[in-house]
Length: 392
Image (cartoon, rainbow, N blue to C red; front, side, top):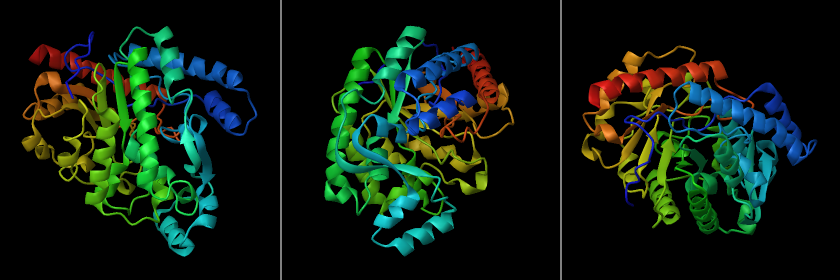
């Protein structure tokens, strides 16, 4: 697709991946909404305040392209249960009752230390459809409260298909994940066009599980519980992900599109998260019809950056320059050094600066505080000012 240049952003634009830590009253409202104890209006009264606060904190920290902090979502993908008819939020313990090989799934869950009664997945139980979109309400509210360019993160087509198709339940309606993917692609394509027409500047498809496909199933990427029973060949899966992304994005212009890939963002224990460089993924990522790859690069687990050498300038890069899972504050100098390293492979106008992932991927498990998020974003902003002096 044609590269989209966003108006009103300086060189080395500072942006977020999506989520921002949620205040305690919002977490309580999210719980109560899931239990049908509050009306949508009552919930939104709490969520509106949280979004405005998240906006204020991002803007004060010097963020150039903002999001709503995913404040209305329980997490970055299962929130679609409230937006897509035909899906049901199910605990992993409930899924066990439908598993073809229950013993194997139980064994995998134990090995991954996944709490079967706590983790919930959106599962397709009927034909899927959406009437009011996945994030159109979020964008409409943002447009009233900020003049900054807006990024809207939505689940990518591979993520949405793989995390919601469960053998024994979904196959009664969609015989295979490929069958489900046709409807997922249609829903995401319509969403992308509507978001663009409403004035979104940047749409980011979240595909975090692609690293798991190539770096192994031995990590507790909890949102993959539904598809644990399916043995998967990495090459086939990456080709599937590439095809779905290109079907969603085909011919869509007038908005910046990106794909976000990380290595797990549910724990502060670095040793349980995935390790390995982007080498195996890059041949597929660069073929996606998107402008930008939003990648985790701040942690040593992301491997060496030399793997970008043969793909230099093929895409913009959303460079992860701070680790959202630590209290330790990176310095502007550290970020400048990391960017200078990437300037060997990407022109200055192709590098955007962001944290490795969100600051509050799962509502119940903010991995940082709003103060921590603010300070980390401010450091990125300071580094961007320095880089503009050096390279502007």
